[in-house]
Length: 47
Image 1 (cartoon, rainbow, N blue to C red):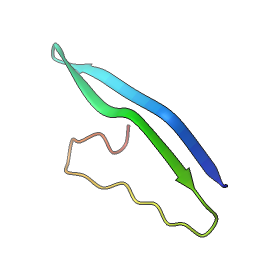
Image 2 (cartoon, rainbow, N blue to C red):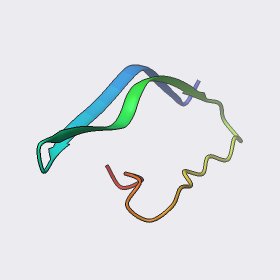
Image 3 (tube, one colour):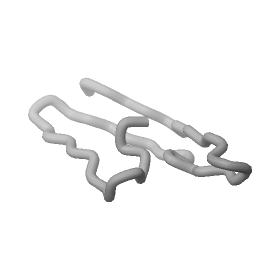
C-alpha cells in the first residue's frame, strides 16, 4: 500500500453556509495505480 486515507473530512464556511468539500471518504492507492480528482470549477478539488 502506497497511501491509505480513512474518514477524511474537509468542511468550510462560505457566506454563512457550510460547504462539504470532502465528506468522510476512504481511499487506498496501490503501487501502479493512477488517481485523478475531477470536478467542476469551484467544487473543492484543490481543498
